[in-house]
Length: 334
Ligand SMILES: NC(=O)c1ccc[n+]([C@@H]2O[C@H](COP(=O)([O-])OP(=O)(O)OC[C@H]3O[C@@H](n4cnc5c(N)ncnc54)[C@H](OP(=O)(O)O)[C@@H]3O)[C@@H](O)[C@H]2O)c1
Image (cartoon, rainbow, N blue to C red; front, side):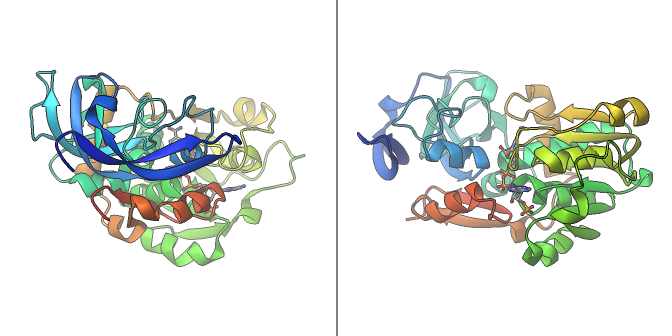
């Protein structure tokens, strides 16, 4: 890489309306205006990245485009007094990798408000093993705690447990002392989930129910849902009196087939999690927790590192619901 040229994944639309991915040299002058120029060392793969990398216009309107909603690296130039050359920083969410050239390039330029200093206790690679998935899992735990859901109140259910957000939620909840029930469609992921701290691993059939019943036996004090649809509905129906359910994803479905009974007869709270627009103050609190009291000791076991050129099978796997754990993208790997 020379000072102006850098390597990036570029997703382009062909004349036949199909999308293809190439690794190309790009120029810093191609990047959008912004306060902080960052040399990206690591990024990660999230479900949204796979959508952007395959031409989903709900995520990315205009192509050619460089995906990557997460990035960690060092500041090269800053027009903001908040950052100096060499600072170790991370960016997750906002518009990064959606309609702003993202972390699948060795350089990004972004507004200063998007940039978070990497706290002591984390490095760029660990920060990206967490990435958006980790921030989302941490927000879910933070809001469960804020609603008074404590380890003494009973087990917490995590759906889509072997996925990125799910596996990090299992590990974080276990670290915070909760009894965790993990739901997974991958029987082969049971050992992986137990190593992360799940007390029980359930198949999807054990949780999903006949959608006709308005309420099920109350089992969970809290739920971290990443899949939506009938699974989320069943999880809400089987949450105990005054329990809280967080909802962040639609890996299964965006529908929610439900009546009002869980809310009006059991006082269940349903809380949406939006990590993309998580306020700066909350982000700082959560990244400090992830670097300190919520540090995940099993992070290495749930994240594998891949080069940009190795991402294709991981993109296919995440779109098919087959991916287990996290993929960290090493921008310097050949
Ligand atoms: N709101 C936010 O801030 C936010 C942030 C990050 C992600 N998300 C969303 O959260 C979801 C998960 O993201 P991710 O990056 O963790 O993706 P991921 O790694 O693909 O995890 C999703 C998991 O959901 C389960 N799943 C997939 N298809 C399913 C189906 N048809 N029925 C039931 N379960 C199914 C699978 O786990 P098992 O095989 O273990 O069941 C899969 O591994 C996505 O919808 C993503 O867009 C939202």
